[in-house]
Image 1 (cartoon, rainbow, N blue to C red):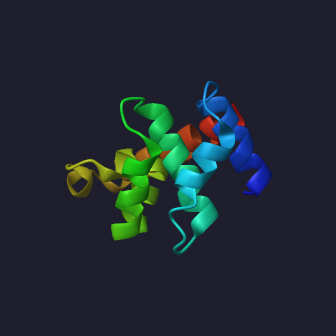
Image 2: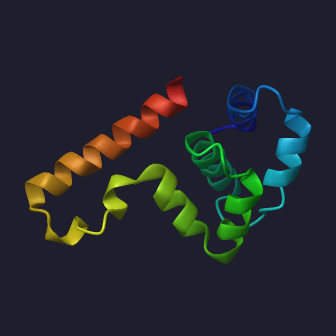
Length: 106
């Protein structure tokens, strides 16, 4: 992931907004894995347009891993994850990777 890819996703997800304003909001998160977390915030905001990036920035400040998990591994966060068979877990893991890769590529 590069800052240029993040900026491209910002422009794609927030076409009517000033990219610099969105970047300023994202820059309020300055913790671990900053670029990865900022991209996750953009993805989560893309999936739920009712929520502003600031909502996920605040969540990342509390525990950045929660934001990463929701963005990158949504199906693995299911309540029934631990009841799935090893085969089913492998399918879910693969599906999560594929959905994230598709989102990045679009």
